[in-house]
Image (cartoon, rainbow, N blue to C red; front, side):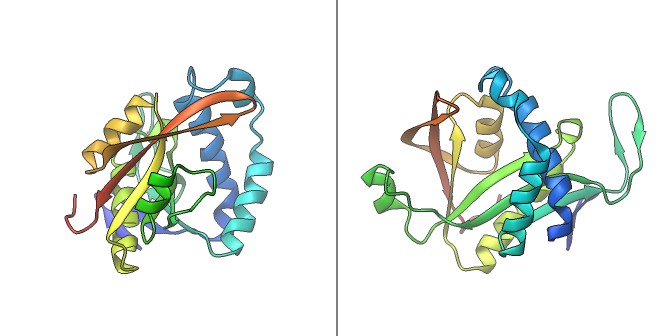
Length: 196
């Protein structure tokens, strides 16, 4: 467990699956409004996501969760100590057969930040930075020298956050679909030798 400011970060357990799923759905609906079809966002199912996360956590997927002892929102003081405010999942870079050859040749031995979400009400309060630091420390402890991630090409706030964390756009995009909606994501990466 580590502390970054008032944010406490720890490794997730299967008992966290429900809270992780709730943040996952809430963050998608908030962050991807206007980027992903409203019908897709409305159809997100917290119970199904919780079951999937429970299974992944049971299997050992690395997820760090952030909690806060006393957060202030625009409308009220919130003192629900220990409540999850965000999470990040990280592990070895996934090699897809459908990935561009440049990506497949570039990323062996890299770590990948699989997903990273902060509850909408807790954004811009240091939770994301604390989770980033935990993921970075884990990667370094595991001996990774490079970290990559895929981000929606139109998700400007996320791209700016990752740039502040030292990642750069590698100019490698890939197309994918969600519920038949064509989308583009870009590969961002950084060397882990220099902390941010």
